[in-house]
Image (cartoon, rainbow, N blue to C red; front, side, top):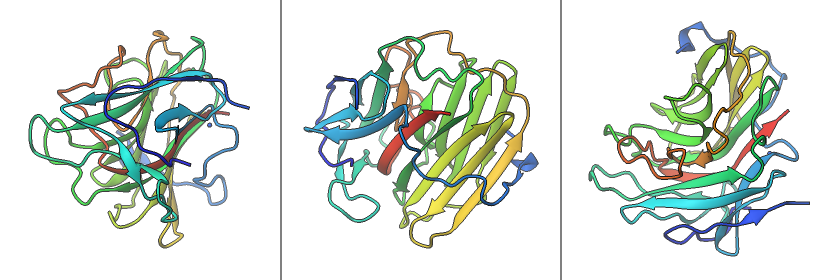
Length: 264
């Protein structure tokens, strides 16, 4: 589905389409859920006509924010098909390294605002062999809404080569990290799932067909974003105004297919 080249700079479109508490975590019950893209997601970003598009059900504007010559390119997908994924910029220790992050801004102020509802979000990813190592880029952010300094956030990321999920609401915060250490030669589907007061990270290794699940429990409360301009971001951190956070981008380095969010 993610099949074309995103050129350097920003392009936008509005589409109305026809989805730290690792030590306290435990294995999730088998069969409770699986790390697959849900049907009819609220957010599902793909490429059409050389531009990123919202293919989910929520009307939204989609842009690409770039810095220091960063760009997104066409890459092979999980099945090896050409153009099946977005190829994000490579990691480098250069302080002025290329960066590119997708920004999705909903048209209606109440959209992608989960409140107390259950929620799933994630993507299928293949990280580069080198994807971290300095203060500006020391992680691989997959998809999120909100920042670590905000009162409300949900995020999927690769942290120390391990898939991880963060959820913060009115009543508290949960963080869960998978036991799995990702092999950069493998594709993985990573899904974060909020079910009441439980946060679970699910992974599927496309090379071995192995699935893993790990969960934490605790009060989170409602996820109501007080600032309606907070974007959904894919592949790194953006300010509420849509600019790349140069001091701590956590640029995703690798290939990504079908990033999504669905309120259940």
